[in-house]
Image 1 (tube, rainbow, N blue to C red):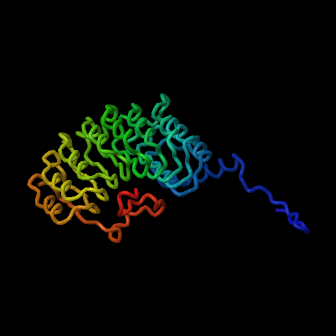
Image 2: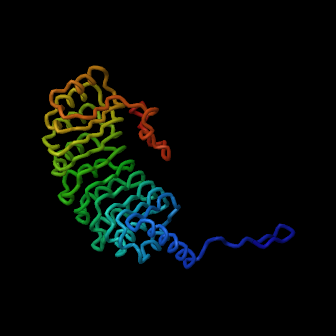
Image 3: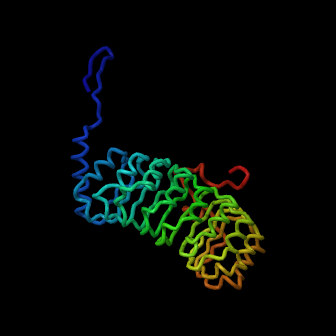
Length: 314
């Protein structure tokens, strides 16, 4: 900065050149990978799209299996760069939660024939601004047949995604699906739970999806869930009637963990679940939850997404 009398000070731009940023990133990556060549943890680093390009071009990534890019400033344009990078072909876990993804990038990745990240086992893209249609496109993609765990919660997922899940035949390895805080209606839920994918899932998270009594009846009566062990349906809208249907479910008899707190059922519904003659394998049963006891129920970064007590205000 050059200072002059009379208020005519001139400020030099502080933005580093591409060369400077590249040199800085290369040193940062070298040090991180020297500590653990399998893990590259870059969450909360204010990483933007140009940084992603520099990272993907780094030659020392061949041993990285876990790439954590959560809580950054990555938007749609960078997704293809990530998934089509030769240097990241061996990544098995990718974390992209809390970024600026809006949907087009995910659609582009889903439809690309240049994907190199074929070994991906875990993908977290929760807490972005992904559109329903983009997540549906991803569920129709044939690029990720090895994916075992997918978290798309806290986005705008809804009926298109539910229908695509019901129709997909491309995720033969998927065992864990997290769809917390979505917008699925009853008819789309019916289509989703009839899909072949439901028989292979071991864990399903449908917390905060506005499921009412009819929705619980659909879940409880679906002739699926052959492998399901963990079901999370907390923070929905079902009452005693839905709880009773859950307590009588025979298809959900394999559950070992059930989380159903913060719903509208009372003592009668709670008793129907607790004294169930069919849910006999439960090792963990949560019927009551409070925010004060479980801070994980609160998303402090996006409080507007919290489900209010009044379901009509959602």
